Image (cartoon, rainbow, N blue to C red; front, side, top):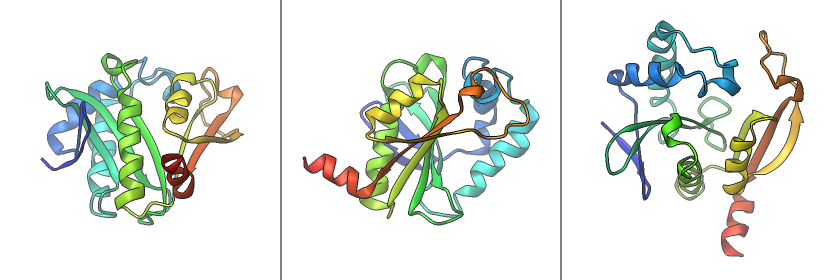
Length: 188
């Protein structure tokens, strides 16, 4: 197992094929999937044969970028994942930030802690110039995580989803942070 990053409470590591059932469980929770699929679980065969292989293949593209399994630092228990991957294949300058955590990890600042650690690593060691993140406009908890990490609201947009879910009529929001903004915030 390759550990990518440690924080006070989290270990972020590469996924392995042995993590399939952890992802099946995560994507099977209707509350976890509420703002993604309207609460419909991802079919286990899709997780095993599409999602996990895509995650694993990404590690060969851009070193230090991809999806990271998140575990509790003290217990080793799987909490979910963080995404920190190029918007444009292999180009580390513009990165998409995301996360998906089990309900047991909600409300304790772990999403903010993991996102902030990835942002800091991206700007200090990975050549990142801009971090962007999207969520449903009605997903106030994720919007708050983005704001706590220093990302600023950029725009609201409406995507054409094949199966709209509750709240999608309000659109999606994009947040972003540039290296310059991150640097100025730390200096000031």
